[in-house]
Image 1: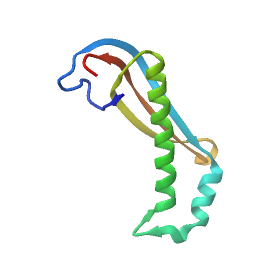
Image 2: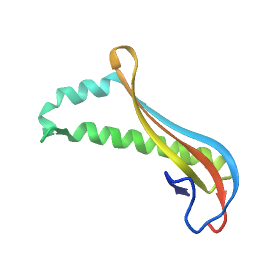
Image 3: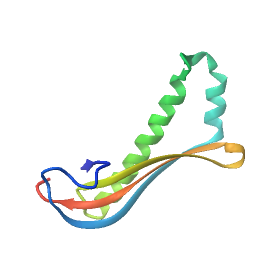
Image 4: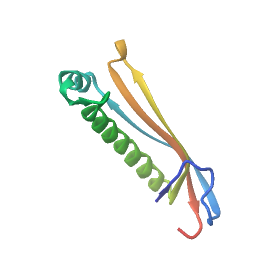
Length: 108
């Protein structure tokens, strides 16, 4: 499965558009409490634990996006957009949302 932010796939013709696909992952407040409790992990203004959790959430969202595309009969997703949103009361949750267009491309 090819996943790309571009609207086309170089050297491949898009034969069919299946529709919009979305993958989402939400991290709850307990994750942030854990991050703030481990301030010692911050080096050079970056938090390794926080970055690891964001990476995990992004991977979950991409897996959902890819599975939804496969279920539609697609072999690629084009025009991918990744958004991070703080949601919930007092910003207690973080959502990673990934969307794109599921397509069937020739030669994949």
